[in-house]
Length: 160
Image 1 (cartoon, rainbow, N blue to C red):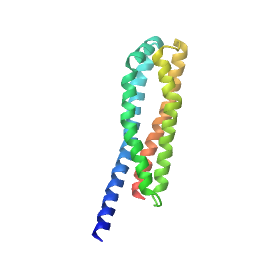
Image 2: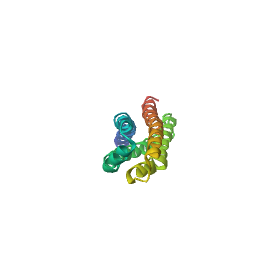
Image 3: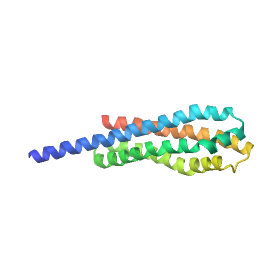
Image 4: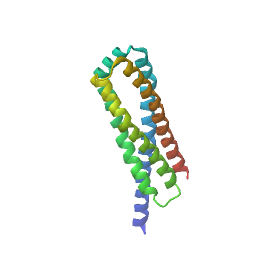
């Protein structure tokens, strides 16, 4: 009987770790993206298009390196949270959170990776770059919103 209690306790601790990774990861990801959007986005818009493209070509690696540091623990956390919640009342919140994170990941790979590559490799003209940056910032705000909602859903899950 004592072994069963210890195993249940261990499972509860592991689930809590996954929950923390999922919630803090999604919140951290939205914070990183918010910082990029507000600080860098405003700065980028203040530059002439050619200056922006030059800046992006020189500095894109700093932005690109920040994202995987946050995304990987978040994905581990959400997968573990869904796994340990299977069959429980909190599962619907974790699945909704996972769906929000999936939207973020799809937007990242379908739009942001190609757009960032185009900014960095100099294939865009000045007019095209300015329009693409405006589109980038608009879609970036949507991505921030989905990451924030994912974190909020995680908080709701632990209350269920």
